[in-house]
Amino acid sequence: MTVSNTTLNPLLFSFKNKNISLSSIIINIIPLLCGAKSICTPILEEEKSLLSEISSGQLRIRSGEEVRSFDFLTSNFGGILPRRPLPIVWAHPKDACSPLKDLSSSVRPGELFGVAVIRGNCSFDMKAYYVERLGASLMIVADMNDRALQRLGGKQPIAGGIGIPSIMVSTACAEHMLRNRVNTLPVTSKESEVEVRNKEDIIVTLIPSDNSIISDNWIDLAFTEWANNDDDLLTQIEGLIQKYTHKHPSNDVIS
Image 1 (cartoon, helix red, strand yellow):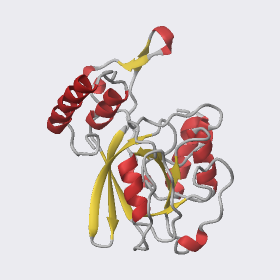
Image 2: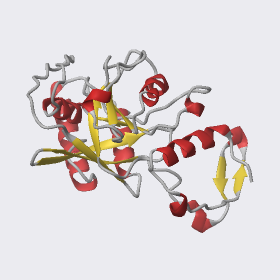
Image 3: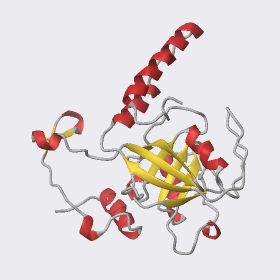
């Protein structure tokens, strides 16, 4: 059996960063039936129900005694999500659209860490390329303009050579991380300017979802056509709050 180069790099990265071990690998060989537009799907009914990839989950943030959880959506490139807690540092420059300043002084020697970046100014795969070169184990893309979350996409050939896993988080999550991160510079968004306080470093843990409810809800919100007048808009928002209160595992999408 052979694997493509787009499969090999994420696997090698995951081994290097101890996201997986040789003893933990389970391989399922699933026959696929390919049709029009090269769309391939499993043939057997029991295999159709397999979760082909993790599309979303909860990001649990601990800073001192405080613990909060926010939604995240994953990328369609990169390796396996880390399961161990990671300290998070902010990229410099924060958009990660050029080679990043060495952050070794912000983490302990040999410690695995994640890097948070701001959305915009360049493609997601370009950001991941520079963050991976820095030696990080995870890239967190923060949307500072209060938009609905989306999954991170990448284009070949850059995306095919990226091993680092990436996730996107909401404005509420990003502002919480900024308020609780020592030695972080303020970031100005269209909606707010974040005041930064000196606190303990934040530690994040990823809790992947075993279904697509979180990602489906965010995608649904992203494609919502909003009413033009205030009364209809208020009614629409109230309806969405009721909808997501009953079916969404957190309040992040509501906020």
